[in-house]
Amino acid sequence: MKINEHFYKNSPFYRAPEDLVFYDVKKHESIAVHGILDDKAQTGFPRMPRAVAEATNERVACLYTNPAGGRVRFKTDSARLALRATYPNLTPRSILTDQASMGFDVYLYENGVPTFYAAPYPPVDMTDGYEKCITLGKGEHEVEIYLPIYNDLASLAIGLDAGASLAPPTPYTRNRPMLYYGSSITQGASASRAGNVYSAILERRFDTDFINLGFASGACGEEAIGAYMASLSPSVFVCDYDYNAPSAAHLAATHLPLYRKMRAAHPTLPIILITKPILLACADNEDNDRRREIICETYRTARAEGDKNVYLIDGKQMLARYGAGMACADGVHPNDLGMLAYADAITRILQNELGWEVRGK
Image 1 (cartoon, rainbow, N blue to C red):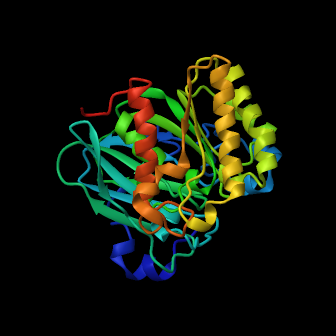
Image 2: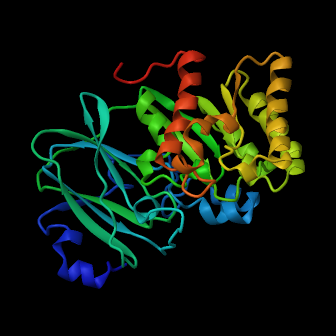
């Protein structure tokens, strides 16, 4: 698959130096890929098996190959780092930056703590891929690269200086992943870049792996995806699909059964239930009140049955302190500030109820 001819041939800004050595991130044993289905038979960077996606609904079958929540991690002493990405197709997203939708987000570890370093953004007229090189400087670097949120990725290779080391990353303190299920918000809309999605913020705070099963307009709590999630081994399950349930009646028919399925498979799993954020006065209505009550009723039922490992976050209050204009992109999807509010609300549960410690403190 060829790279955009104009940028590839004429602009060194979007063309990696020829003396770098490239490594396919899915094939090199020292490069760890997280949040992506570990199945060599699958092409691209899918988040779940194709059969499960197709059995769930058309939207999930379309979006499961978007590598939202995917991360590439490794150590190197290379003074330069290049990315060479190709895409099977590209779809602009009106509520997302191109950087979030199809670009990459690079963090470097400083004293064991990941710190934002660079966002190698794609060219505006990219057609099927691009290259970009950034300078890391001297010494050993531990690198984490977040993958695009809302576009499929056909291939990704990293370019390093010839002779540079390439070693596995430091393992997560919590290797059992947090599992997130929900709507376009869970998938990442409308964070400005992949590292600002609330699941990624929590990953860095608590040094924990995670799986993002957010699907824009596709999270409806069906049996197929419920059974798949119950087959996994998460450390925490965050359930946030209020927005995508087509009606309050559908939410009522699926929400408690989904909770019960996860609880039956994992008797002590911490489960966090979230109601949708209410940002605009027009959204503070009877339908959303009914949806909120359905989720609260799942929580109350669980607690009444003796479940001490279920928790509730009231989305109506979660972003209220910021007002409609500051924490969202369009009245529905949280921006970076809104994503931080989500992360803070979940942090309070992880710290105060589960005793998790924030990294570096």
